[in-house]
Length: 412
Image 1 (cartoon, rainbow, N blue to C red):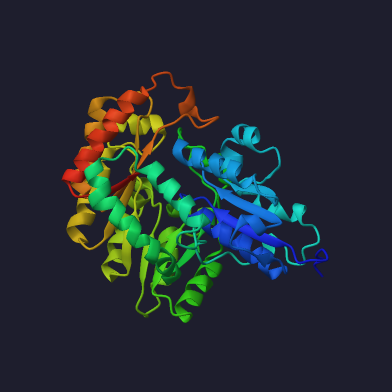
Image 2: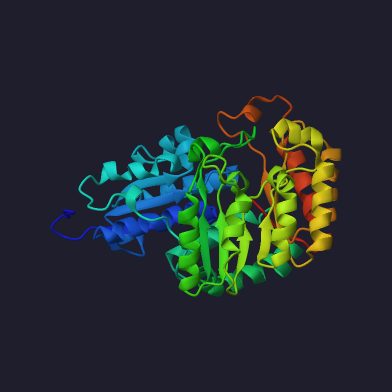
């Protein structure tokens, strides 16, 4: 039996505004963990005995946001535990702001060590199938947090784009975000990452790659269907690698889901170009079903030279041909992507190749990441760094090109 103090302890959980969908699942599972063990969940850190912050550090902007939130939450009386990717990517910087408790994503199940009397252990709980909201109410503490993070992300965008595109969408999301998230049933199919991208610190934060058993993924999907969900999202750090460690494949999993005859759609997140090329023939059949609503397809660059230095798949011509095929054969497929600007050694012609690749694919949304030296990454040791002034010039150039193509984007 879980033993609580004389009063039931109050817990506040927060995921930073720009946390990825995997960390939002972690935040939801943390809430489930405390609820099932008898703790009271509260909507504000002011009244909490325990404060858990799930952080992001995939870019410098997001790392800065996480550090700011750590500093803000330290002002309250509750015992602060910093979780997520910041402790795994840049623990040294975190410790300058917070000398207390922290848990990297890869070790999240060790939270039991802080709460040894818990009856239900974290690792024994089912995975979450709901995204934890990054803010809950309008015009309160969480709203202010959201506004702060949002305007940090748009500071480099053109005034016209902010007024005509970003601001109306953000105001709409204030009212729709909660209901939209509630309509989606996310299924995490694996943990960790098996790639070795030279710029990325995420691998050190999320740990070794391992797939969720096929039968559990399928059971979660069927649970979502039986609960009335029609929109599903398949997520992982690299969905295409699914099954490599358990004798299965990503197409095997999708085809198992597609055996269901109900009315539903599936959004696929983080399908790397190398895996879509590997499974092209499988996806030619899968996409014909009309059940796949969208694919997030992180190209990162349109330059073979830069991609090679990134340790990414480096034949952009094959990627471009694949994207053109997808656009022509499946025009209703919602394709989105990530790109990185300012990678060491990047030249003007490399940026132009990236713009050209986007133009050929006509992505519906582009997330622009500004390169920074993530600690302990191979790219951080490269000498040919691009000056910040040049990166900002290239950002404006890319933003202008995307606006001319009427493609949505955000800067991360």
